[in-house]
Image (tube, rainbow, N blue to C red):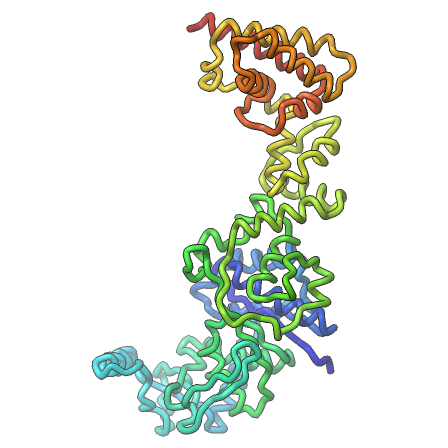
Length: 472
Ligand code: GLU
């Protein structure tokens, strides 16, 4: 028997958010670190809120991140009969009971509780009645312990307890025949021999209920590791509806899996003062003792910084695969450039996102070159046509195409066009060669464009600018 078995148990009721994924990462890491198993369980018993697209999304994200699970995923929806068998066994053993209280009665109990300023709870009306009424819908409730307390040692939060009289006889089988979350979790964790339950802090209240079911079935209690919340930059809880916590937005804008994993690892776990952890290091160093108790804040700037680090530090081969996938994902054509790898290597150390690399590359593809009429209107003056003619002549005559010679031509223009500010000359050159107002150093761009594209674009610009004048 292996000593560490963890699981990730998402409910497909919405898109996974950053918090869910961190839970998956920690569970995966802890299993890998200990040569254990990491299982995936799809908790799809909520028939009204489940959606197949969310299940595909779970697979997509875990695979994108490389968090591969062991064995086949378990679907709770396929185990309903099995859960029910156990529930009816518990009914035989008097550990649970049928409750026939209807909606109106439950509503009344709730109102009375609220009136008396106590937490709404079921009043155990059906508990000892042993009702068995034919053709009347019922739910099955767990007979919670009436005395004592539930106590467990959480690996992150330490001792946590609650008095049993604060818990009520909660439902484990709904009237539609579907067992509830707290029950299924206990049965599955036991059947899957889960040793470490790693999940969000918001499940602590469920843990009490689950431990009581475990006790009544004489199962072993697993280790619990509840993870503190992740907050967004405004200090609010992340939710499945919150855009900034949706990971596909990060994928689409060109984050790498390595940086997401690294950033998520650091959200609540630390090792010395290290910021960068490659996956093999995470697997070696991860432990449960260094998980922080306090909530963490998702810091977008830091995420960008980590992404920049990985973009310039992973192998070219890997980067090109990511870049290709990124372009396919965003439905973008791969730019056709002879000196593509040279251009990419130049922009890599300056890129925060894969999108930055793409945005830079397309500057050199003539298919994407165009001059916006509104922006061009700023340059409607004869002197700019003259300036463009000057550059055209000089660049066409240049045979040794290197940065020094390119700079010489630009410096020369300063001497000839003395009435124009130097910065302005750069601006003109940048706009008419790229169609953009800001780019990296224009001499480098000219170098990468090469003579024929520079000639083509200057001719095009001269023509456009002259026509523009004519039409005004
Ligand atoms: N299905 C639960 C959720 O998505 C997780 C349950 C668990 O980890 O025990 O929040």
